[in-house]
Every structure is written in structure tokens, then in C-alpha cells.
Length: 153
Image: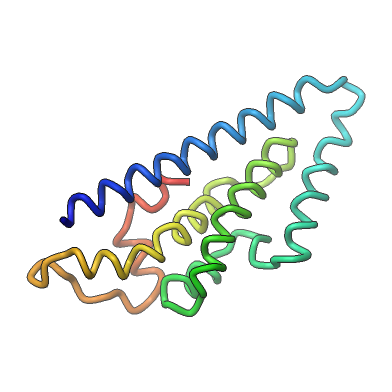
């Protein structure tokens, strides 16, 4: 049963990863087709889209390490985590795809942690008691003990 749960998580994570890649490359290809004279304006479009998202859901702005801690310590609602996965995925792809400068690794790690955190209760249900490890007490322990968390966008 435990392997089936992880198989479902892996397939679902693969779908999210493929969606991230397709959206990012699609947006970038679309903006590269615009006339050269619009190059200066393209990052403005990305900034406006991300800013509009941030106006309504401020957690989408920035790298998101603080929100990762809230998610992994159980202080964030499941609905907000699901919303952050979708909005962070869109914010990173739109920002990067329109030519804005900035990192991609940090936001992807926060996206991955918001993706992983809701699955934690299921891990403890499906794992045999003898194989369960004590729950990490700080979000950095999650990040350090889960190197695959950043392999998924």
C-alpha cells in the first residue's frame, strides 16, 4: 500500500513538472516571436501579471521560504497550499518566460514544498509504524531530509 501511495505521488508530481516545463517554454517561445521593438515591454507584462496575482494572494510573491515553513509546520490551510502550487507555478513561468531577471531555484523549492506538505499525513498513514521517523520540528529539517523536494518544480 505504501508503494502505491508513493507511485501516485510520483505520477502526480511528474504531471506538475511537465506542466511547468510546457508552460515555461510555451510562454518564452511566444514572447520571442514578438517584434524586436517590444523586447523592453515584455518584462513589464510579466511583472503586471505577477503583481496582479500578488495583489490578491501575497504569498505568491518572493521566494516563499517563510511560507514553506508555515506549510511544513502545519500552519497553512490545504486550500492555500493548493492555490500556491498553481499560482506559484504560473508566477514563476510568466515571470521567467517574459524575460524578467530573477532566480528560479528558490521559488521552485517553495513550490515543491507546498506540493509535498499536504501529502505528509498520508505518508504516516501508509508507512508501517516501524519505518516511521519522528516528524521534523523545523522546516529546514524537511528541506535537508528531502533532497528530492527540489527535483520537482
